[in-house]
Length: 325
Length: 78
Image 1 (cartoon, each protein chain N blue to C red):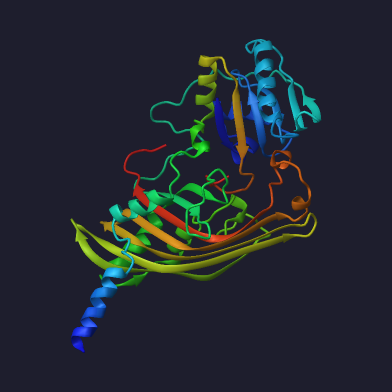
Image 2 (image 1 turned 120 degrees about the vertical axis):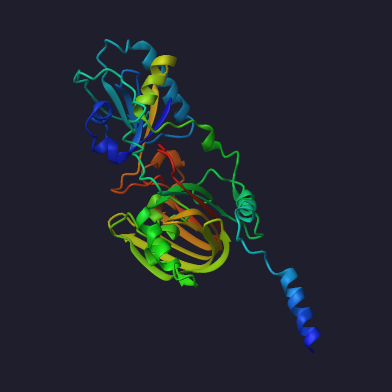
């Protein structure tokens, strides 16, 4: 049963029933991120940070299935096995402290899970697709890797939308507010979160916005609202060097944008954007290139990435009308 | 001369890339890059631990938890 949990929740469990289960699982973690197998009582059977090779991944899962069958989950004490690498580098097991866990009660009809909190009515939920192209401008086939293909979701708040609405009231062409443009552009990138070029989550990263400009031109009326045609350009760059371990990254994305925004009243009724351009991404410790280990051996450190390709991004945004998890 | 200029404008209009100015046109572009059968989407990830525990109790299977994004921001990207 696969469950994805953000480390922020695991490392700082909230109050409540869900928080109690998260706290029990988090207690035995060997690192802030990782893979854990837990039984149906919410006890962690094993944590793993990496694997000796690809073949060990299914072996780890089978090992956990066997352990799950051996332990009567409702009664037994369950020490948590922990591995830096499975199976060659075990860590000391974490003992079971026999914490009393609450009865399992599901979220009520009007309750929101801590992992997916309620969104303010009118919030624009935008989905983005991005894909690298090869030298012949054909979409790259391998879509498993994040440096080749992404799907992502982000919100555009009522506040950002209203900045656009205010400017549109003059009924003539206007430049979209910088905060709005940054919010959109910050999600049009390939690769993992660490290489996000705008609003970088990495404190040591140095970001530069060479160009961030989207313009809206009035178009046709749509019922009581209006469609605005969008055109513009973005060129953003971020880089980082970590001297102590040699990890470095460089990421530059230059995109030409076009699309539309439909305004209705005080909100955006729908948003559609298409971007074409070029993306350069280098990430990782150059020493990783020299070591011929499989990627599963260093999941936390990642693997070396080096791409420079044409890219395409599409964004569709629609408002949250009802409560949406 | 005027006719020639009008002819050039006509030809340019025919050959210029279509504007992406409607949902229908945008959807067509996105369809060309969207990967409909990408393997990681075939895993039915849950985001709610309580739902996962409930399913685990019904099926007798353990949970596998992917604990990700060790950054102090709210994002869905790994």
